[in-house]
Image 1 (tube, helix red, strand yellow):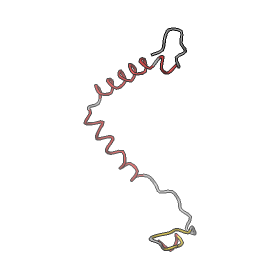
Image 2: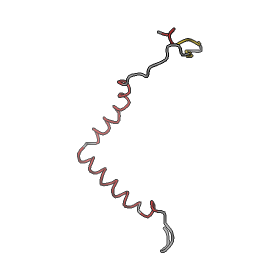
Image 3: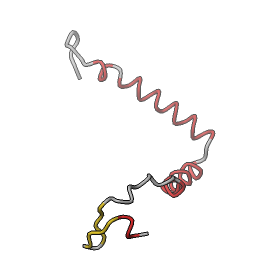
Image 4: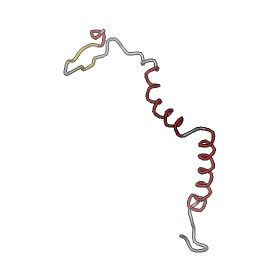
Length: 76
């Protein structure tokens, strides 16, 4: 802890305010949403990547598959 008159960085000086705000925000969410719902949402997040459209690939690009050097168009 710093002595009176000693320079204290801004973030350290107001860290207790940030903790209080974080606690209030988290308590708001836990009142509105159950822990179970939050965990289900976090578990489901990786599955969202399955619905993304894959990026367009150059058919003439050279790729390696299991040690084989192939043109991408040979794979389709």
